[in-house]
Amino acid sequence: MTAAPLAPSAPTVPAARRRAPARRILGYAALYGILIAFSVFMLLPMAFAVLGSLKPENEIFTVPMRWLPSTPQWQNYVLPFQKNIGRYFFNSMIVSIVQTASPMLFCSLAGYSLAKFDYPGRNLVFLFILSTIMLPIQVTLVPTFLIIKELGWVNTYAGLIVPGLATTFGTFLMRQFFLSLPSEYMDAARIDGASEPRIFWNIMLPMCRPALSALGIFSFTGSWNSFLWPLVVVNQDEMRTLPLGMVFYMGEQRVPEYGQLLAVSVIATIPVLVLFLVLQRELIKGASMSGIKG
Image 1 (tube, rainbow, N blue to C red):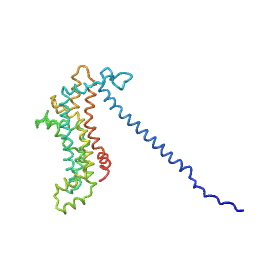
Image 2 (cartoon, one colour):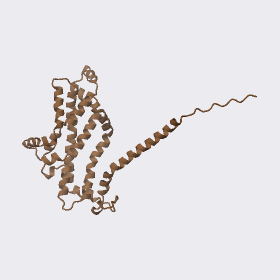
Image 3 (cartoon, one colour):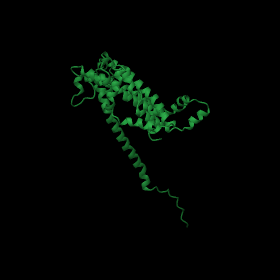
Image 4 (cartoon, one colour):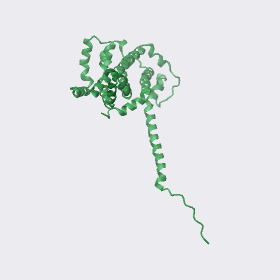
């Protein structure tokens, strides 16, 4: 009598390998839990501003805090615009749009020149431009104001806009990005007979969309939130920008209307938020690609 052959047993999986997926799942769960907790924590101020803008004045700072308003106060969004907030918002839009478009053009030209053309003193010019980053704005504030005053641009859009037409950061950002682009594109275009302006405008600049998007959102945010320079160069109410106007608007009220102030703050956030949502993909791409090459 012969014994029946034993069926082949399934290959045994080491215990460490069985525990690995479980550890990975727990790790991802902990990571996402921390990220969600931080996201909620970061959104709390915005939630307080949005909900507080709809509350009556006696409910904004109650202890313990009530998140939801008993009766939404929609007039908090209407009353400021019946005064001068609309004018301040318009001034900020004009200044911010121009101070966003102009650095994208001028800093691109400067960065392209410093990155792709070899001429005497190029590195010296670049070092000189970089050195201006070390100068705090308080050092250049008085000379810049004296120049603007001599030009007769106090209380004008020119006085608000011209000092921010180009930035050192923008020049540095665009130079670094142009360095990462192969110069063979330029050589091929020259062989095909393209002129230098056309090479820049039709070939090289479109490849800089990530850097341009990053520069655009940084420039718009900086200009939109600017307070010190408008405070110095403007002393007429109709030329104030939104950050400056909000301070004077609240100062003119005998009893501060915090609901209206929160409503204006929420409205002031919308342009920056919309711009970020539109350009966020290019912004992340530009932030990861600029400054690490070249």
